[in-house]
Image 1 (spheres, helix red, strand yellow):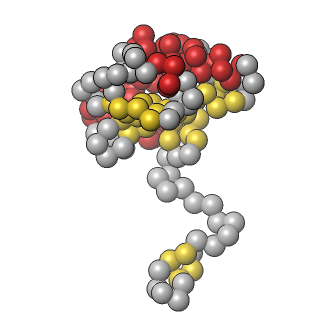
Image 2: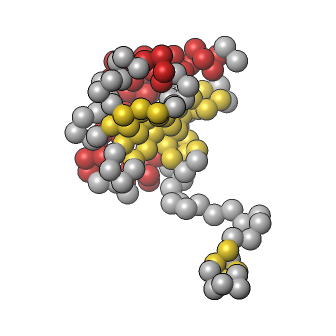
Length: 134
């Protein structure tokens, strides 16, 4: 990095750096508090059960799953919540997600109030169907 005239560091074009530096889901989870880690490990197991052929990866610096070369779902932890990112299928499950904060493609939840496994499986299956239809 070089310093701009203002004294701030600026990133040069072509110098890719990782903000958090996690290269695996295990490394990402290890850096979290125990309650968030437990909630996200449970979510991870549920995603694996719903999509056993999916491969784990890091995408956009957060844990993700890829199926047949296409991104499937993401999950992660914020300062005050955990989140599951199943993409554009969230609107189809608004009724079932009424106890959680949602936005376009995102479901936020508290570690002590995780997403039900059955609902996660439905969201993952819907996402698989949506990506297969493309």
